[in-house]
Image (cartoon, rainbow, N blue to C red; front, side, top):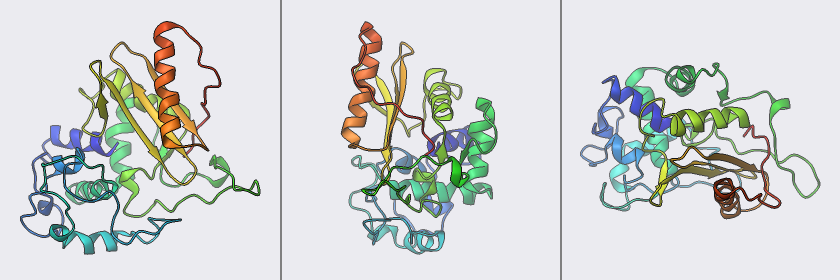
Length: 258
């Protein structure tokens, strides 16, 4: 959704894809990093912010911490911006901060105004803080719900929002199949000749794959166990089966609120 917000704001000339990041943040000057680089994962920034933990990696990654790191982005890049692609949650946190700075709105407001409303989804359909009794969580070895990662800080624009499966499906169809905003944003990954346009993600126990192909087939797969690779494979297998009418044995699809 962050990439879509960027595309909408660029279309409205609030920002430009080629704005240097220091235009909107107190970043180190002349890093060469633009909003486009952040959106297409060619900024040269590492996948994770420095000093993240293992079991709750983003707990201490606050906006204050992001602002501190922004001042030395030039020392954190691992490649020249635009040189190569490296998926970066850190980069998307920086992008989200730049967009909120450019507009004076918080991230949830930007998503609500520029993504949810045009797709006919109500405010709060995607949220950083759903009611606790509506969260679908994985379980630990004792069968108790696992505590989700803390994702409401600066990392929120990189994938900290919660939604139902129905909402995830509406986002996929609206953004990729119906192309409500035009060509899908730089956020989406593209592979193959068709191509398959998809995005995936994982947090502590939750894995998701959302993808579509040009003939209109699409799928959302959410799992509370297993690997990211297996979840991606389940999604791709589902799309292939839809093409030839063959059922997928033991397919894994579950309602998603995370």
